[in-house]
Length: 136
Picture 1 (spheres, rainbow, N blue to C red):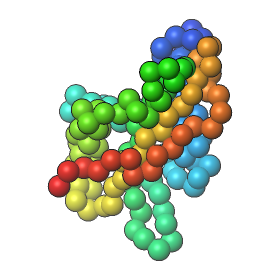
Picture 2 (cartoon, rainbow, N blue to C red):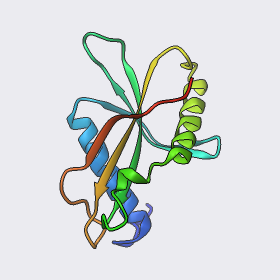
Picture 3 (cartoon, rainbow, N blue to C red):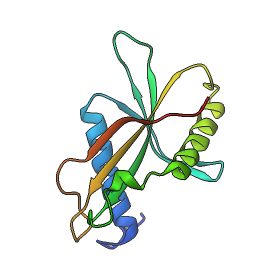
Picture 4 (tube, rainbow, N blue to C red):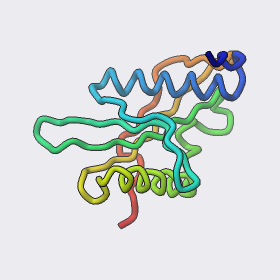
């Protein structure tokens, strides 16, 4: 059985932020269908499925970012255009592998998680739905 990363380590902080984001997404009624998917030189933190009674299901690709301090900006501000392109590239690969490319609705969200000095989440994560778009 793998051991837990040391408290406060980068790995611990990342896992804690991802768990906080996943809990928020699930509490909002989405279902997590994939975590930490890597392809095309990029990674998807969370892939969720959102069912709206009026619409077809939407696959939501979620980038999770964390910061212990907002001194240099918030966690969500770290998702620049370059990072967006990487997430879109990984999402495209994920969709193609599952024969869903151009067959389903997709959305790109960003969730920022504030962490305390021990790398534990504090407060409610900041969820930006439809944070960016794939260029057509």
